[in-house]
Image 1 (cartoon, rainbow, N blue to C red):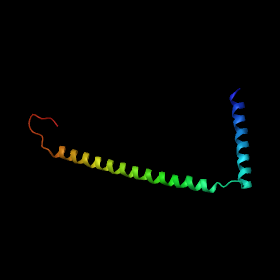
Image 2 (cartoon, helix red, strand yellow; image 1 turned 60 degrees about the horizontal axis):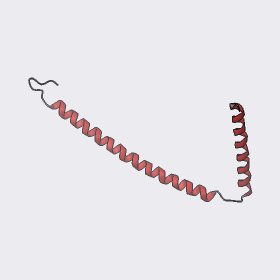
Image 3 (cartoon, one colour; image 1 turned 90 degrees about the horizontal axis):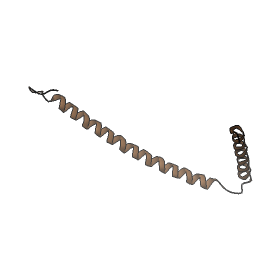
Image 4 (cartoon, rainbow, N blue to C red; image 1 turned 120 degrees about the horizontal axis):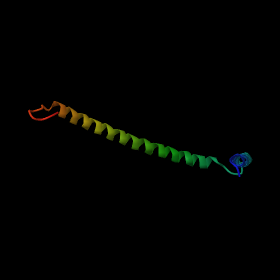
Length: 86
């Protein structure tokens, strides 16, 4: 089976599933609203957890940068004595 025939069959199957889903939703046999509400609430939880992890990571990076800047400033302000190289 060549690629174009396989892709065509996938397209036909997708259209058939989409049409079946549209008919099922149109008849109102089942409600998608509770499932969507639950899915969205879990998505919001995930967004909040991700935001807190990213905020913690940002704070840690800022702390690390501040420590590195302090170490660099301390190293630059230390006078070079004879026999030492910079």
